Length: 123
Image 1 (tube, rainbow, N blue to C red):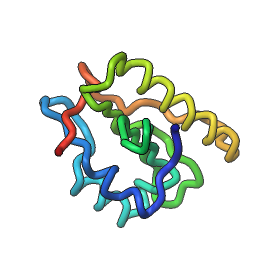
Image 2 (cartoon, rainbow, N blue to C red):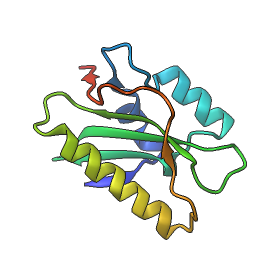
Image 3 (cartoon, helix red, strand yellow):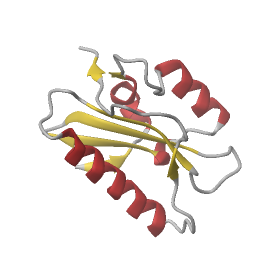
């Protein structure tokens, strides 16, 4: 299942981490972005299998925006086979929802190098 988050998903959103030097949104950045209005529940998406979060996508937008403008972070649990399938399906689901919500320009990926989209989950 792929869906945007609610306040009750905060623990799942913050449970993802990245082992490498590649850019990603950590817990402090996410919480600061939520406070500033640049990261929002409706712009943060999770992929679940049997109730367990397996992938996370966080989009950013200006605080006064109706829709996000870029994808800041995409992480997939390394235990998942074919992470590219999960990440692709999560992004497509979110983009479809953004389009249904009236966005006229689909968000783009953040202009940073992203050699890997795989994360380590904190246990």
